[in-house]
Image (cartoon, rainbow, N blue to C red; front, side, top):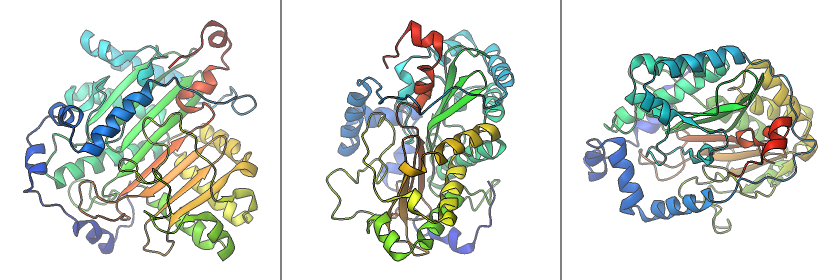
Length: 421
């Protein structure tokens, strides 16, 4: 996704290039994704990540839960081109080998829906991996995304993939991070009239998409970038997530002092007043990352209904940007739903709100959770959060992730089974 990049933005991350002679990088550049992941999973290093991996395994054993969905979600027409999506998916299946089809397809109620993750190491090897299939098959996978997502959403997804490839080149480890370091999985049978879905996941891009007739749910999803600007090579000028950043800062700076103070729940990005666990290694300030399907998140900050109309307009603009993966009618339907809950929607902020300050923000209601966070370096060596490393995600609370709330409304499914995760 092109933007007006500046020399200042370019130099920001270039000052934080890591020492590629360190064993971490000299080893990584020689490994396959499977060898690399095995060290994390079995080697116990770093200890914090091994502990996190064991914790994720425990979380996965919990059944998927959610409070009552009555009156929150409904079945409706999003106008998605379901016949074209089904056809594109069938085209892919037709050119796969039998072993590839076996890896690709899961039951719609499989708990494997929940095993997506956004780090560069491959923790859950399911589906087909784009870097390992033929160019024809890879094109077919991307065509499914293209006919499913909005043009803007598809551009953002491709931008995230290209940024990942750029990072792999920067740290000389394209085996681990490249434009096609992503897995694609199907859940259920592609159909124009029964529910099914797909997952597309890898470093800094994870999309979980549920279909029922002409209705679509994209949730949870994660999009990130380190750095968020490509300043060299064939995709020079590609930049993602800058509008989400700019709109959030504009809103916070527009608030009167009293409302800024109410919104700002912590002044520092790693604030000493934070309770234990509020900041963590894997997600930093994020609360809704991978494997956090059942987390209880208290509201923080200020009610959106207490903001001026112009500021509510900025909330809408942020939501629209986060919903941009959705096709037009689905986006408008979802936005209308979110606006209908402004009386129970909260805006909160962590960090400063000067032009150069890194920050975190969250929009939270019974029907959506949106998170934006500037991170410290994972591959670049900035020890403090920087504006060139961004993580964003969207969740649908009250059972809305993975289309679960919608499944409970489909008469046949409601009668015949209860999903047990």
